[in-house]
Image (cartoon, helix red, strand yellow):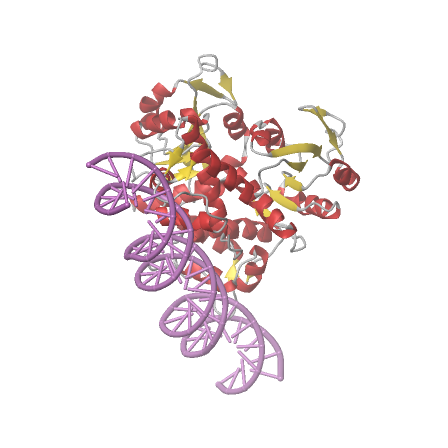
Length: 210
Length: 210
DNA sequence: CCAGTCATGTGAATTTTTTAACAAGTGGAA
DNA sequence: TTCCACTTGTTAAAAAATTCACATGACTGG
């Protein structure tokens, strides 16, 4: 366990490893080598060993990795061996899809409050949660122990949502709106836009055909 | 315009540039320098110039880039200056959210057919589209000119969906299901899982606090 | 218990990506 | 016209990430 800087790409791969490992476990595999796991994840086996080495020594030489144990170790390394409470801002198309997405809890995240500034939506019940005006975020965040903010507003409202979150002392933000936001630099922000992937596919197809 | 290998990270950034440029255009900016664009995207200005250089010379020395022109050029470079027809497999939570997501067309992608193997869903109309059994994919794909497959099934069905897509001669696949798929290597696959980003946020928060 | 096989963890070599630096081109003012 | 302030495109340098290669430890069968 050496505490150097950990590449962002490593974190992305760890998420892949978890996914593949859980499927392996479901299929009854108890042990796996970095070589086999590598093939399943389409990466190099050294890559896997190096990624894991940032966090500790999880394998047994001559044997491999115990699948269940490795899953647990990776989750602990990422800090997802507990439940993170989230605040959702913006209950439109994307927002309500997220509220309905029941994998959240299974994966260690729980949307505990939903906010929207549309007067027609405020007060409505959605998936067992009352939609509240974002001005109440500041008082609710400490009460409910909200740590992560999820922005799912239209792009022009994203910055305002971010301001509310920062003001409420939220610790990290994930932004589904297609616009950049400015927040104090100690607060991590992740942008999610699956069109990026569609662009990547379109580009790769285009490359191959001309 | 030199036709070297283009880093995947470059493609990801180009998507960001488009997003920021479109917001700039909406705010009335006609020209922008790589330096200002860089700040808006939180990257280095050399990075931007280098990314663009893979595809051509789009700027004017001493002046900068004409915003509208640059957007058009980037889109053409990525191959998204046209509409890509998509087939959706799996009309569950995720799938129906995608069908309702009206940005698709605005961004150059159109879901032209929806498939699901659940007998209760087959025949149903959804967002003006009839849900069809995936066995019909092979005959419909050429008729409708479907080029990209979108998998939104449960994880254990993803491989079967992929097989149908490959069989129907689809050119690229985007997989929203949380499992890896195997396809012939000339077919590009992109995996989308926004929990990756939640993990990244959780990790970054955890890093800062212990 | 020893030999042979397997697979990890890691330092060194390689490759890739990012950043810095600057020559070359642009436009405007004097 | 000439000078000056800008900003690109590109080459060179630096940094970072990936892959290789192997010493080290673990298990198995004889």
